[in-house]
Amino acid sequence: MRALRILLIVVVILGGLFVIADRVAVNFAEGEAADRLKTTENLSATPDVSIKGFPFLTQVVGGSLDDIEVGITDYEAAAGNGAEKIRIDDLRADMRGVEFSGDYSSATATSATGTATIAYAELLKTAKSEPTQVAPGVTAHVVGLSDGGNGKIKVTVEATVLGTKLPEPVSVLSSVTVIDGDTVRVKADGLPKFGGVEIAESRVRAITDFQQKIDGLPGGIQLDKVQAAPDGVEITVKGSNVRLAG
Image 1 (tube, one colour):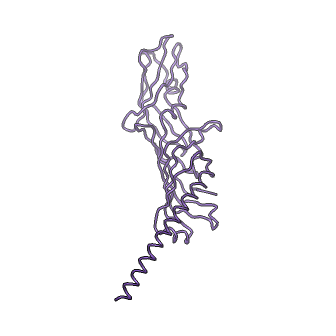
Image 2 (cartoon, rainbow, N blue to C red; image 1 turned 30 degrees about the vertical axis):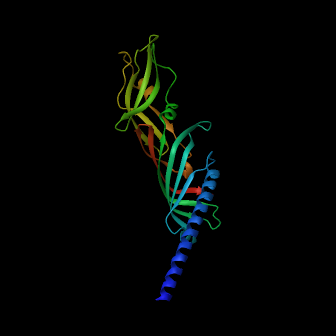
Image 3 (cartoon, rainbow, N blue to C red; image 1 turned 135 degrees about the vertical axis):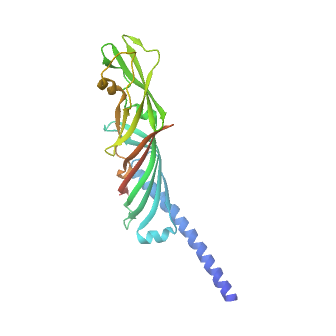
C-alpha cells in the first residue's frame, strides 16, 4: 500500500509538472504567433492570439493545432483604391486545423470563420456626401447612416430644391448585402421624395445606393454575410487555406 501511495504521488507530481510545462509552452507560442501575425499583416498593434485545446505539446508534435482564436481590435483593410483604407473594428477569427512548417516560419488554417464590425461613420465615407444634382434645381447628398431595425440601414439624405434646403432630411430603409465576397452593397428598398419633385429612379439611386469594397483581410479571408446593427454593420467572414504566417 505504501508503494502504491508513493507511485500515485509521483504520478500526480509528474502530471502537474506536465500541465505547467504545457501552459508555459502555449503562452510562449501565443506570444510568438501574435508577433509574427503583426509583422505579416503589418498591424499597428499586437493582436490577441489564443491557442485552444489540451495538451498543446502533443499537438505540436503532430504538426497541427486544432483551434486558434485571433483578435484584432482595429484593422485597416483596402477599400478598392490603393490609397484608401477602411477601418474594421474588433475582428475576431476562429482558425481550425492549423498546420505549420517544421521551423514554424509558416502556418496555414484549413478553415476560418469570424466576425467584425464596420462603423457607420466608416461606411459613410463611400456614400455621396457632397451635394449632387439629381434633377434641374434639385441637389441631394447622404448625411447619415444608422440602424433602421430588422437588419436594415437607415440612409438619411439632405436635399435642396431651387436653392432652398428642405426643412427636414428624408430617409429610406436600405438592405445591406455582400457581393463577390469582398463588397458590401447598400440598396434602398424604396425611394425617398424630395419636396414632391418627380425624379428618375436611377438619379435617386445614384445618391441612396452605394457599394464599399473591402479587400486584403488577414490571411485572405472573405466577407460572408452582413447586417445592420446598433453600432454599425456587423459582418461575418470565412475562408479556407488561410495563411497565418509565412
